[in-house]
Image (cartoon, rainbow, N blue to C red; front, side):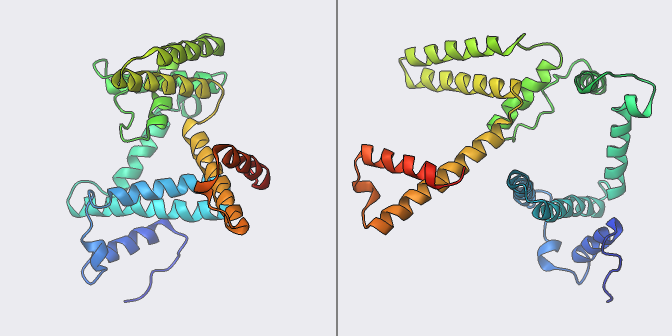
Amino acid sequence: MSLPENFSQFDTLVEIIARLRGPGGCPWDREQTHASLREDLLEECYEVLEALDEGDVKRLGEELGDLLMQVVLHAQIAAEAGEFEIGDVIRSINTKLIQRHPHVFGSLKVKDADEVLINWEALKKKERGSDTSMLANVPKQLPALSYSQDIQSRVARVGFDWEDIGGVIDKLVEEVREFKQVDSQEKRAREFGDLLFTLVNIARRLGVDSESALREANKRFYRRFSYMEKVCHQRGVNFDELSFDEQNALWEEAKKGVEG
């Protein structure tokens, strides 16, 4: 069987996936289901995010390809089951984009991006009906920080927001005070959650993505601690035998010796 042509064409990807799933195709691809591919899809999403965080545009292009493969594979599985086809997927998103951008494809006038978001939420409200919460379609499987930032952003579009960041800072002080006063583990966990929620709110108001900020902090910690381990090895000392003050001094050295 001949190889597909026009490797830059979307239809070629669809053809390749169909052949992998078809008779004589790949045994692994043929046995996959929507459910079995769940973790693969999630992993590909995170790899795209990692490429974005690293600013690696070449890798970003490659990871987007892997993510697109997942979309086409799910569509092929659905087509075989008579559920929907890739054309339905494309038709759905094209229709949605046009309907939600009347300021581009219609006569509606908007003055800035903020007004676009307000109008976007009004259109989505009309689509979901009055009996459904505006938060209902936020994926609950999102990482907690991302979910928190998303639901806060959505309610802010309808005016449920602090007038200025000063109010959020005051709220943070209040949450810290309440956290310090708790007298049980159950209450401590609850107040800590409120504290995190408020920190996410501050990040949102400052235009900081909480999930990305924490990922970057994790990376910095990893690089710095690895540097500390390397230095200890070079100096012939065991890290766990150092005093806390000595460990902190080494941490400060790592902060200077490792970029970021």
